[in-house]
Image 1 (spheres, one colour):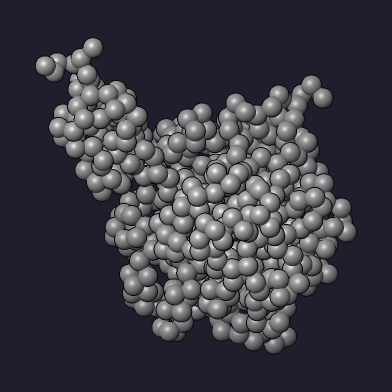
Image 2 (spheres, rainbow over the protein chains, first blue to last red; image 1 turned 120 degrees about the vertical axis):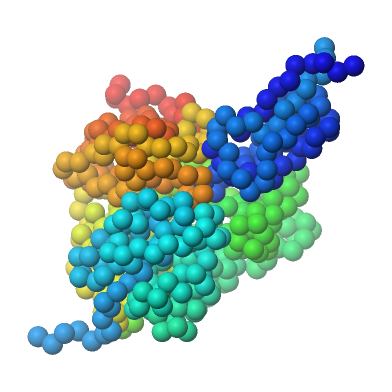
Length: 79
Length: 458
């Protein structure tokens, strides 16, 4: 049934991971919060770029991530 | 001549990092006092760690496990045998418990008495003290606002738009504006949530949100001998997310008489809390009226603007006062000539909504020349991490007039080369060349691209 494209959700900036909202196997809609990052006293929400199913969540709270590090992978709903 | 009375320091710990730690160490070095630095694991190779005469490792990376860890810092104080601690700004600078803990161990806290920090730390208590002292405050609630009904009745009395503020807040955190009654519940909840999160206190109060306002603050200095003076005002009306990014002095558009009145109110405010050391009385100027907002009981980022304008070394005055000496300047000796501007060079990308920019600084060439001062905490090779605030360096330009100071700043920012991380330099250059800046129009939420046309066509 599945089989849509797998879309990486990158951090977008170097930051620490404050919390992770996405869980493996969970559905997500475009714009849903995947994780909250913190950098330089500012909180930044990273949201799902597409609607689909979360297939993996490499992000771990309390860790440091780089700009291109993948926080989660979303399998897009097959059109 | 007999030496002035007091307790001399031979060694002082600077409980901070970055540019302000270096700024304080410079004053100590000029006075022949040994400096002790502290550095987190993330700051092992930082410039401030190398500048101090000796540097102790704090371990940890997050502020809570390093620069905010009172017990760790006090243990280093004892270990290093320091006489006093200078907290800089941020971190423990306005932490009354830290000031008390220092005193209990016989270490001088370089700053105001813990009681003054506590009194001004609660914005609600501060408002009450100022009202009693005859200092005008922004119309708003008498004390804390505990329910939506209470918020509605205050809003009805003072009129929308209103600002909901965390009682323990500051620095643009725990601050929400409600334009209408419908926005009131969300504003209340958000301000309370941020107050709880950033300051451990979810209580809020309400003030009228003044339109057409300028953010004007007054630098004050007090000593243990009953002297309280001011070093003039600064205008900090250029902000992003309600946090200052450009400060200047004198405040544009203020008459000499009005300036004197405002500065006199600030001295009255400082006296009302028995203020000692350097502090800042912050206020809003709206419709020609000055309203007390809050008092910052510490050295501020923008203190250098006033130093350049008056020639008074505010950090050295703090040190002298902490050693029990009287201020070295009297009010009648304070002279303000010309103008000074400060631009905060933050590691942020204005074009991406002021998103923090981390990384390694691969090229660093600070400006120099007439009327330019750079206080920097970084150098080529510095790794800018996400753990602390985004201020890399401050540029202060002075001139005989606001125009000359602006020209110098633009020249200096043009010379300033930083590669490897994004900075606010492009935004500052665009903004200082705009008509908005030339006309001194305040901006509480500056954004790149929203800047109006350049001023050349005047």
